[in-house]
Length: 294
Image 1 (cartoon, rainbow, N blue to C red):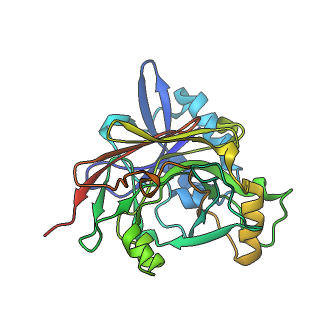
Image 2 (cartoon, rainbow, N blue to C red; image 1 turned 45 degrees about the vertical axis):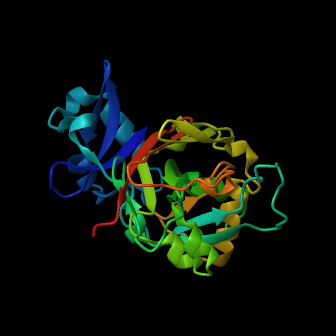
């Protein structure tokens, strides 16, 4: 099941499910039936701990009995980040081997935070900050927490995953190297997320997914989530030993080799570039790069 947060023109955010109708993709609006459950935002949907998925599935399979639900072509809506106000966005770093195949010499996941103000959605623009000339990309599988997690075991960890999406960890490398890693990660627009949330039953094994990123038409990253140093249960167990995770929180699982700083010569983003991240079983996240306003 593909679930979206979306808007029509300048309307308030809504939630919906993407369904196939012949050759077309259609967004079925879910605010009306979900309001009876007190859930009209994605964060509220996932907080229902999976109990809502059969309800939504029944709606999708029996649309005749739900004829009042609004339908929109996918092209006519603006896709927003699947979760709009996560209480936390935690990114695991150094979770894949280097371009030379060297695994990081670490015994536990390392992570950093991004502010929710960095979030943008499908088709939105990444804005290059005026103070940086070395803005880089990192394609990542992200998961959304669906159940409060505190000191969760690895055996129980996957029960806390509501679904999966795609993120691009944008980083100002020159600012990072200068000793300001938090600033380097947290400029506005530095966390594209989307295009939708895919429930675990439609993804399969999240540790066997191809992950690729193109800058313009050049493929730079081409890896697999099977390469992760720490898998998802290990990540959730560790993070939940440090801090409580709440429904709607975003956890990004690291990025395979192929970033701009790993190229020879170095390659960084410039205005006019387009980024495409594709993860098997989820879809493709597209964003363009623009210069900061004068």
